[in-house]
Amino acid sequence: MEPLDFPQLLQRYAELTVRVGLNVQPGQRLVIMAPLHAASFIRQVATVAYQNGCPLVNVMWVDDELTLVRFQHAARNTFDEYPSWLTDGILQCLERGDAYLQVGGGDPDLLKGLDPEPLAIAGRVAEKHNYPLRTHVSRSSVNWSIVCVPSPAWAMKVFPGETAQQAESRLWQAIFTACRLKEADPIAVWQQHIANLRQRCDYLNAKRYQALHFKAPGTDLTVGLPAGHLWAAGAGKSQQGVLFTANVPTEEVFTLPHREQVNGVVAATKPLSYRGSLIENFSLTFAAGRVISLVAEKGEDILRQIIATDENAGRLGEVALVPHSSPISQSNLIYSNTLYDENAADHIALGRGLQFTMRDGPKMSEEEFIQAGGNVSLIHMDFMVGSGQMDVDGITANGAREPVMRSGEWSFK
Image 1 (cartoon, rainbow, N blue to C red):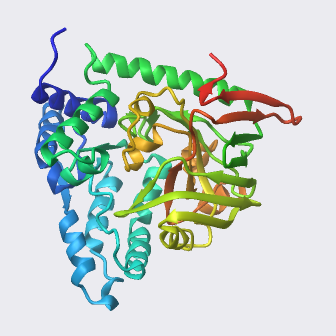
Image 2: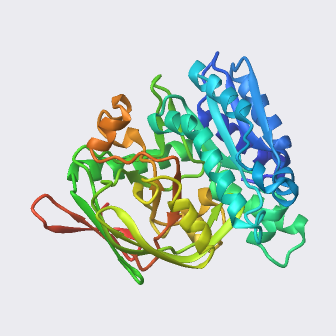
């Protein structure tokens, strides 16, 4: 097979996004939230969607530079303002049953060094307005997906010392490799990859562990699992029965922690990018499910504000396992982007639990979900805790321990 050129790989990326990520159905509309720098790619996605029977593609554009301008120049008493028409419009699309694509890849250092108070206010307001959208995602009410398109600023963060053009080219190639787009038949390779992840889920669902224990340098954490927890991975299924892949790429299997049964300390192994700021070298201590203390080398004030978003933001909503041998991990890159870094390492998420990871969860009210052990919050924030030094044990109903991962790799076939 001859090497593919950039336009061919980009076309494959658009096809993978529409056919595997979203699995847009004939007659189904598509709504997209995307940054301006991704416009060329979005046009290709729209072309593939229309060719597959989509009647209408709606795009909501966002711009990093406009976001920065606001925080640099707007009056301090105006950060409780929010463009509610934006989330209202997307919500209307989701309630109608449209597929939903989110595109990331902005500057991870966009808001570095700015006054944290306006950032915190704007963040809380945004989380409140986006809460209905998160509810749709949590319940898998529609087929949705997240992909990334490199911006020059993001690329130069991953490849410092390169020119913007060189860095962007290298990051595109890393994305094409991580998404398996250089294989002879990427769609078939993805189908097999998803099947392999599903087998991991089947094994873990059959085990019905009561808890997981994570042990690594700086980490000694026990995460309880509710009785009705379900392991999920790769392809999910919307309430309309449409298979979709929420994260492209994806390497994880994940489930629901019990909101009141997390105890111990956990150290992050990669930086966390949150709304244009980086939080680095941090650790959290949990007791009875809640964060009781934290330290961070950089961004500690931002991390504290995140956990103070609401009364449940300091509890866990997701626990995920990723082998250290995943292609993203083996690239040896720090992406400073949650979609990519979380698929390089075991991770956990503060905030809202995903209701589809609980038996009958999508049918539950929020109160019922909480009663069953799930968490409800305005936020859902993943951060990475895994490495090649991580051991994970499954704890059975009788208290026995079984190896799940050793030195960052699966302990079962």
